[in-house]
Image 1 (cartoon, rainbow, N blue to C red):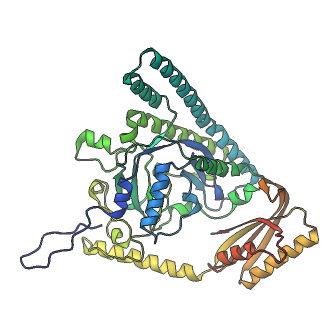
Image 2 (spheres, rainbow, N blue to C red; image 1 turned 30 degrees about the vertical axis):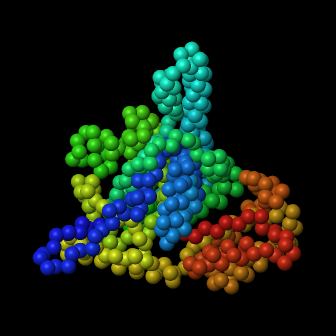
Amino acid sequence: MAAVDTSAAPGATPPLAAPAVAPLVGELEATAASYLEPEAFFVSWQGVLTLAFRGFTAPLVDLKQRIYAAHPSLPAENPGSKWPKSSLGCLREGQRLTPEQLAALTAVCHEESAAFAALRTAAAAAAQQQQHRHHHHHHQAPGGGAAAGSEAEAGATAGVRLAVDCAAVVLFECRSLERSISYHHVAFKGGLDGAPPAAEDLARVAAIVAEQDAPGYWFAASRDGNRERHYRAPHLGATLMHPLLPQCWGGGAGGAAAADLSRAGWRAGGQQQRADRQALLAAIAHFRARVDAALPGIAFAAALVEQQQTMSAVAQLSLAPACAAQRQCASQRSGSVLAAPRLAAARAFAPASSSKAAARSSSLLVKAAAAEAAAATEQRTYETMLVLRPTMADEERDQELAKFQAFLQKEGATGLSDLVRGRQRLAYPIKRFTEGIYVLYSYKAAPSAGQAVQKFLSTPTASGVSNILRHMTFAQ
């Protein structure tokens, strides 16, 4: 946001005082640092290559809850931000994974992820040995020194961990974060919480990663959308993320000591954090090389700047027009101040620093408004996957599908096509069934059709017996 001039001429009305700490900054500063551990490389929906972390820690879960409690106007959290990850790359335009290509990528993911599990096993064994030695030493020479030494040794023997001790509010010009308008780096000041994620968070991430091994997962991994243009095309937005790269964010004039303190993970992890992050970056580079060798020309490897999103989008912050008035160069970023985004309802425009900057900001806003208006009227491409009860007779199945097709036509859907994949094994039992009949529909419809389809498929039948075990609708 443009700086406010607090000087005033004699007799002039004094300017309004700005709050000492922006609300969002206050929420971030009150957060405790914690550790994220890599779980596995993963082929996400639409073929996006991802590094999943084991789960959100209690401080990060608490931060998300506090943000939404303090800013209830924030948009609903997207599914992709409910688990910590770093997006590493996507498919090139016009590419679609075949079942064989998905199998090849999944094999690479398993092989390259084995190192993370090995590190956790080794760290657990080392911690157990340290505990045994400490217990033995404690009986021989009781005192505080042994305990302090044990804590230091335990930290040194931990596996690869990312110390999440800061976050950045980023206004970006593309979803890959390769072009950003501004960001505001905030250090966490709530101490250190070294506890692992809760059991439910660990289970959630493990279940998500396990999806890529499900027989019907090809439907989700091969569908259209989220290709290179999606990530690199102009798109204004805001996000809250944690930088992965061990570089200085917002250091500068304070000298080497100040620069060290501003490095991501430095406050909580020290020198070990540099080694951990470099080891993780080396693992990512090796994974990308394996992908390029397995599927040359298919996958697009994003720039390292995209790998900074280890915390994922903690909150989908709406575009704050006041902060889009001027692009700040790298030398100016250390002094930039990004107010807590107050969303579309609080459109307070700050004065631009020059007429050129004001014109650029106005042009961006006009283009964004025009794009939103066009998106509200044009048809979107949808894919709906149905998993039907496997005990259905062919005639009963055809009647169920005909009923759904009639509903789509009533909603004005066009270009309707279907692909019946037949019976396949489910990733987990649903209503005691271990198999289901998979059917994929593709069609075009109005932007409101997605919610209507979800409601139609979720409405119980008069008999109370549903033939649809599971359904998913994706919009592009």
